[in-house]
Image 1 (cartoon, rainbow, N blue to C red):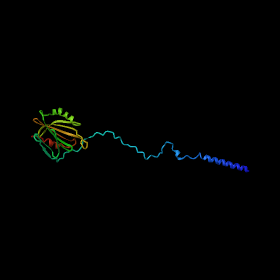
Image 2 (cartoon, rainbow, N blue to C red):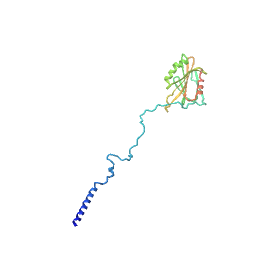
Image 3 (cartoon, one colour):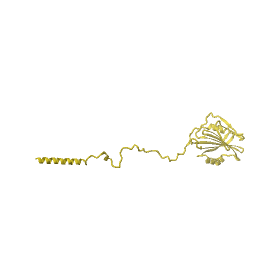
Image 4 (tube, helix red, strand yellow):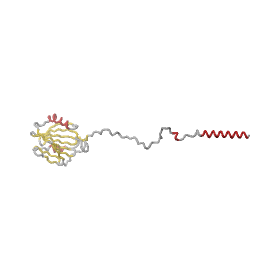
Length: 223
């Protein structure tokens, strides 16, 4: 009976030893083993900059669009003064206060978007509707940006008959804003003897300057 108790105690010791050694190999995996080597956590990296949607800045700037309806009406209460250059043999009324400049035989008066130019030359043959259409119009096409023809006609003014050429074109870009204005032109050609007076009135196409332009064109006088 004593020997049976000894065998039982020895068997229990062997089983306990086996359980103790098996526990070291069946332990639960650690949390670090759940992430495969070489992978990253699913949480976003706060130091990574967000994607940008900006377009490259290397694209060329868009061309300047022509303004078709800028303000340009001459006030109804505009005063006019007589411009009579010495020894020129003519006079014409121009709006008071407009800036004056001279380039060769041409004198210009400007205010905001409107312009008046007078130019006196000599010619052996007065211009007619036919010669204006065949010679002057092609010259204007070369000189005026985006030239668009109106018509050539003969009109009566206080100074006598005149050939009138109407057309449209783009102005030069404004040196400050860079804007380009679509202008309407009235070119009057007056003649007396060997003298030819070219009177050009221009302003924005949508400006209502019919009356002021009539005052100017009807004020031409030969001296």
